[in-house]
Length: 617
Image (cartoon, rainbow, N blue to C red; front, side):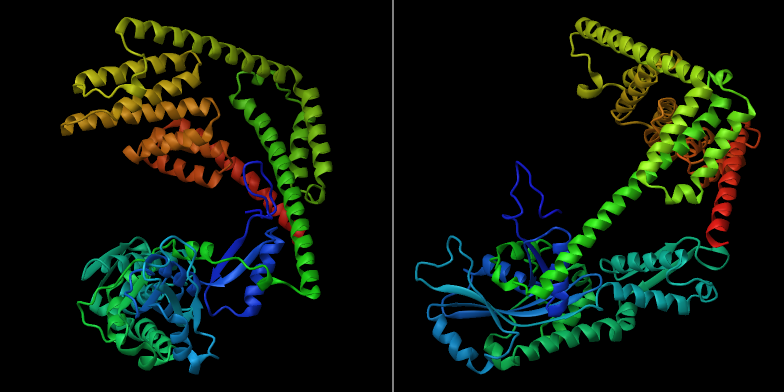
């Protein structure tokens, strides 16, 4: 977010304040570094506040009027996220003579930094009819940057690595792909045990010889494993917070009357048991969850912004200015690199198109077959991976791209003219077809007495046979449009047929299979239409939809591989082609495309090898 951005419909940077809520354990230097980093990111008005202050502010806003006059309530707040845990003890007070009483209570602790008073926020009903005022006092706060629900995942990870024979001999590191899959399995098991007393999760292909591994555990086992690494540490944090708040003497007879839980880790039953145990509450003690994930942001927005609190001296101001200048320079350099990559990709795609056109274009006969033209293509490819290209400026890249386009025009003028003529003809045909289709729809709507747009407005519960007739009618129209080269409208008609496929109801198993088969055909045809239109992302999505119905469909694998080839994702293309080749060893189209991909991969590896040789000698 750019703090210095100006817009006609939003506040300027002078009106915007950015507040960063951080754990109380953050040092002053860390907080200053955060504000300085924000300044370097063009966020000039920013401040840093304790997350505990945000929580206290929100709590006062929500429950300031819930305490009876001359009473107080002690609140324990536990926030356990994935990697960090915070514990705070708050005191909500409602006292008509609060100022005098607070002086008596805090006189002996006036020098303790942990005790802060959150002043009541200006709002309606901040005082009741008797004139009493509510305040929240932060008695103590403790945070730990190394304790969180993620620790449970790690404990389970080491437990299974040590106890499962299929993992004990498996060689993989925690940051490897197999290690991450095991850690993810431990995380899923942890979530499962939050709901069930026992559970098991299967992790695929991580054991010896790529075997699947089953992870099983019970709540009791996890509790024993986490006793030292998680539960004892959490109890120690709560005890420390109690000690810092002055213990039972400061809390008074009220003790801890409310425990607020927030963060995903606090949903785990053994974490809740540990909290009850350390504060001496029975099993039937009910936790409160009044503070949700928005509490930090809400509290940060409610606390008044103070410019004086973040004034900087001359030395730090100079440092901030240098940071901003450096960030701006880096952003400009990033933009230059992005522009260079964009031009390089244009050149590479241009050369690849010319090579591919020899085999797939209807105008391939117009392309030159001379050695000079081949040398031009090879020389351009070599230049793309040369030191000259790597060190070229954006202006030099633009100049080179202009030269390549000029040379292409000299070599392939007739081909380019024919290609442009064909593109213009298709555009004219598409426009004429769109006009004819619109006229036909209007005429059909007039005859049927409807609005002619079944796909958008047809909510009728038609019999299966009638609905299938509509689907097949749209499919037949799409096939006819496709055969005439009207790929855009064909894709739209295939999509319309698919919308009708979603309107079947009460199907028998046989009818469900029939609908699946029709949907598979529609997705395949739609993918082919998008490939013809060179809308490869749409084609890729259609292929995935087809494979979700039939994962072993050769045509879907082949067409997805075609998309990957056009997007120069050769590794992904070869994966699909190998699978298709297993399913249809004699398919000539698969073999031909695989040969083309293998050729491109070999060429790419040769270029990478040559580039590496130039870089490292």
